[in-house]
Length: 237
Image (cartoon, rainbow, N blue to C red):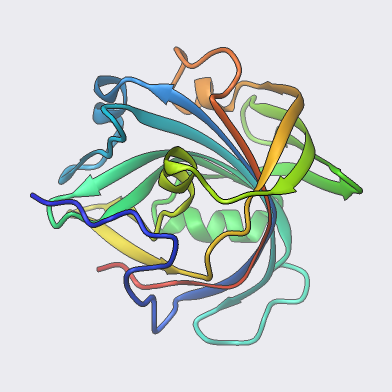
């Protein structure tokens, strides 16, 4: 099985879109994990996607804005909220690269409940994102169960991604297990504008709670993006 290349632009369309969103003030934190740790956490029909024999766990925090389901207009209040997710990197039998979400925390109850009905591991949380000057901070407390995150970044200059940074940010779909099979949903948006970032402070148990208790120490990669607008998420295929 040949994997599709890692590309800065999406290799396929996500139209007609089930969901449109803007993703703003995005923090990307990544740790190296062993493929044998990741493999049991992935859905059937997928395996860990590797870069130079390594795979990664990501903690991504951001603001969602202008969420518009099923081709409708953006939801004025429900459609804007903070979110954080813990994810792994997958490839399927057709060579499609994607992500697998181990957890997602949303700052609005209704979007979290709606996504849970589709089987996605969403929880309702207090999520605050604050961006002032060159500092961006993220604070999360899960309302159901105990999990938290506190992240403070100092944002640096814009940069072109190296191979690792491209590998963990240029992900154009997600793999997800539904009752009878594993499905793939395409994601489409313009290439990420990426900035170097310094991790001033971090404290979180989100990775451990999501099933990765062995992840410890500082991340190997820290990036920031002001975000992308007009993100399209396609139907499961």
